[in-house]
Image (tube, rainbow, N blue to C red; front, side):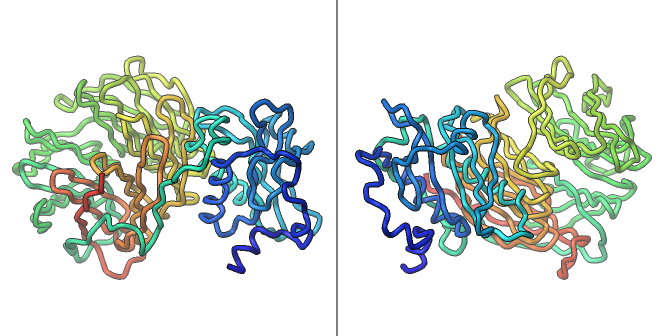
Length: 487
């Protein structure tokens, strides 16, 4: 109780301020509820205040805050932020607090006022990190604000999902298969559901590993692949395509004998893939820093013939994962070294938009909820999950995510996002609806478990445990039972 009161009293003078602060203060019950809930969620947030113009009023005032003063007229700094749209970072006279003031946005992205977040501060504090936290708080509120008028409505129940021991169970550890003698990293999985096979690219070991999908038993090691990354299985041809950044390009394998029957000649450095099922086109990232090239090429191929249909070139040496619309004409791809997501018109084979990822750096993995037009992007510096509107590029929400992630998975049936972190945890997030997200839990996995695949029909999530990530338990695969969400 004492600590809770302390966060509402910035100094002794607060105790002697009039209540109400001004005659007939605005009644913004929902806005105050948002402030109270946000203060509870962010322990290092000292003060939070929302500034807006009440219906029928001429002045912008404080409509909700953690320290009262409701109705206080916005000062020159507040109005400067609202009019210019530029953030303001200001240290108080004592030098122990930093205020991050930003434009307050509604769900549609309209400027409806200002939001002030105040944090403890020291001269050596990371101002940029505090600015990002202020933006995170603003962006967490945004999807809950349908309009300015909504802030002046009555308080309504808000969803809550605590992170940690009190969270509902979401994943249940179910098994592990060891792969002794391996070193370096694993990369991505592939699956043959009718054939009960799970494939794994052992990137630094130069092999393709084959497992029994249901039992997890290791059944075969396929050699001769140099540096494999991604796996694409063609069921009716019983054929495997394995992207390979070695000299032999992308390999074509007979999936019965596992013999290498050919290769697909692309720009060196073949890595990530994406598939357009209706058009039967496979997209492959090639080039880049791993093969000492200063540019990257996204190749479009016919996976059955290996013939290249077209390509898109990027002035970038690090392009990562992609998401491909199955019922539309867009492809989304992370341009990691330039910190933006590129939007490609698949028919024109051209970049039609570049959406900066502002929350953090090194955007790499991506998952896609096509039905709701939402992209789930994970950054590595620092680990952050960013939810984007796939129609506009607008940031919907963002959360702290596990570090060293190489795979993010969207579970449409349970409306969850799984972020596989090499630090040894899986971050789990709940999609309440298209615009509202909650962090559910951090589920322990294993050091180096940073690539994953979800097999919905088996209700299983598999992860590859890379021995190159400082883990002490060695290489292998682990799997979890996916527990159903309550609907």
